[in-house]
Length: 78
Image 1: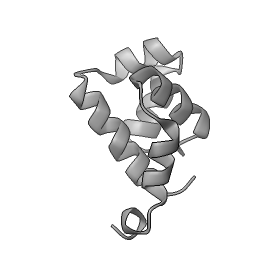
Image 2: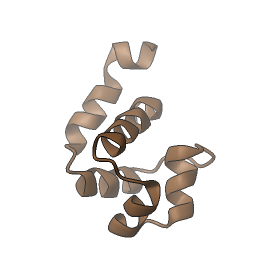
Image 3: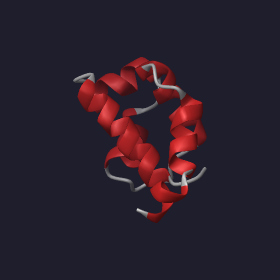
């Protein structure tokens, strides 16, 4: 799914801007809290497209823009 590091960075930035927590995100998305932590915070689990879709929808983010941003050559090189 492109550069997951950049996708995670975009999600974390949006969470911070909205002053939301991982617990809030888990409640609102229905994605288990441990999975949110494993995929987005601790990065101990592989980031899934399902999680990205749920999170993007909940945070009001444009999924296509997130994926396009993460696929840019400069994002991959960083």
